[in-house]
Length: 360
Image (tube, rainbow, N blue to C red; front, top):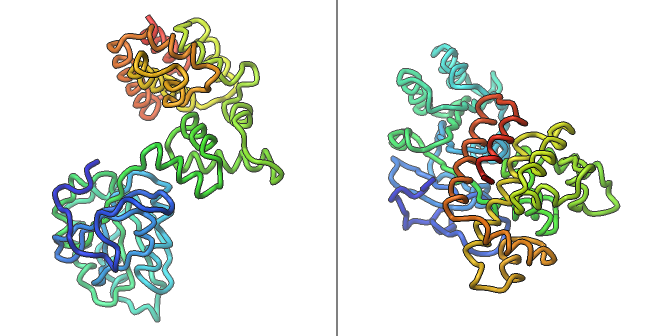
């Protein structure tokens, strides 16, 4: 997602320069803030957004954020921005549409001495009707409102016009390296362990948080989380070694790959986690193939994040795959991701067909 959209600002946000992405500190998602009436755009990291205070008050904000976990992480920020004590209520766009206009205005106009201040978080807010947007605009105009509204959307493309009414804060999705850094900062993980978790569990912050809590309980306070803990507790690969699936894909051993995946699925591993592992190997092949013949086997393995003792086998495998095959494989993996997230195909059968197409 392009968060600038040609609106680079030259102003400062409470001493934080717009567009600053470098420097030390925890890795966070950059944000674009559109304020005022409302032409200025500010790009800051999520960690800087935590300190953000609008120069002018607003009862309504649009919050463009793809990740549900980051949405929950933003709640303390809204509390601080709005000041005082607030109770959060979360609604889908459909549920929000069903709230009578009179109730919205009552919530906004009733003095806080006689009611609890409320923050409505509305998900899929891009789906609200023009009539409901008019109601929200009316709430925006209430002085000292006891109701504040956060309109959460997953994309900023359809809400550009909202910036003329109230501020828009847009969070750019975290990249894989940013997510790994987030794990290092939040859970004090070793860098290689953080990357291993992202590669095998996927980039969803909520799922990563849940699985790390399981791992912390599993290992206890006495030692750090290791790759074998992920393999045993999450990937449930006791029957096979941690590199069995990787090796099968690299060797284009369709029968072995299907066997390993079948065992993982039978042990209860989520299909999306299995898919993430295949994606990781395919990405390694893509990186490795671009470097084979230009660098040594050990250097290729290091860049592709492959164990050094597998360098020779890995570079040999890279030579066996054609660029057209790798590109086609990425399309198949993308289709699989969409299928598992939007429908309920038979996982084992789906992987069987997909792997056959990728390795033929």
